[in-house]
Image 1: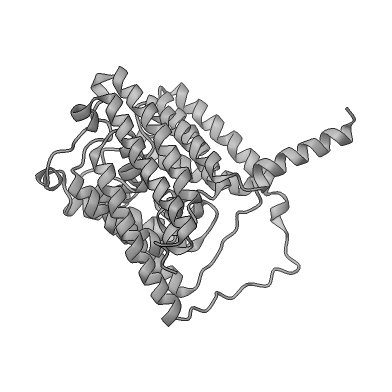
Image 2 (image 1 turned 120 degrees about the vertical axis):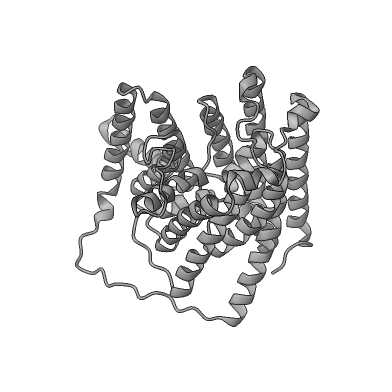
Length: 390
């Protein structure tokens, strides 16, 4: 095979991996498999916990909190998952030549600010964001995950109603674009920077392993892989809850439903072999999941990104989502520290592990049936538009 043919084959492969968006269903399957690997290491995939660590350390540093946080800022299992997600999305954006500082209109920046606060408070109530409180919670057999799913649907409807009202009554001016003529087009070197960045992450993980921090290092690489997947698929849970009611499209809904079904099989098989892991990611009452889901659902519609979606878009340089991530982290930390304390959360009721009541087999069947029903209703709506609000 000639050198020119090899170069062309490499370009085609690179374009497929880093320039064309991956199908949503591929993202759903890969997220499930990567999430199961995180679970096998003892820390299911989540986002809100890592963001709270950022907020906790900031408030401790400025003297608002008297005691240092329980989790290390970088290398704790909780924080490293969120760092890895951000790093993976940033690296993938570089590889795809898609990283740039993207300004938004003033109203959108305000919505990012407010939406981040709503998501921070909602995730504290629910025990996690769309990932930890819904996706990983369902996979882990937490009944609160079903409650948050209902709350997210309600919150998404409320948020969508506001967005439709905004479109009719408020005119938003686009931000002024700077003239880039004559400047250096650094997108040409972004793939090289992205490759170097991923090599750095691998080297960092190796260094962590030499310091007896193998698990955090592996979790960071898995989270970075998740960041790559969701950036390449443009995977955001907002679409699963919003699009059926806005456009009638159910592509994201079907992908999330399939992903949950794969995840619950993997998670509960792991728990079945590890009796001491039964309550992993099962620590919130269903009322908190329901109320938190409503609050979070409104916030993610305002921000234009869920917990994971906001982080990966921040990794692309979107200013609105960077603001949303910051206010998410700060509001979650404050609300959890002063209002939704452990004692208050426990007073709302005990968490429920579905498999304890039904057995592992039926817990998997029940979760899959709920996902199939969700899928079927949204597919029916695709054909009939009965639930579409636009």
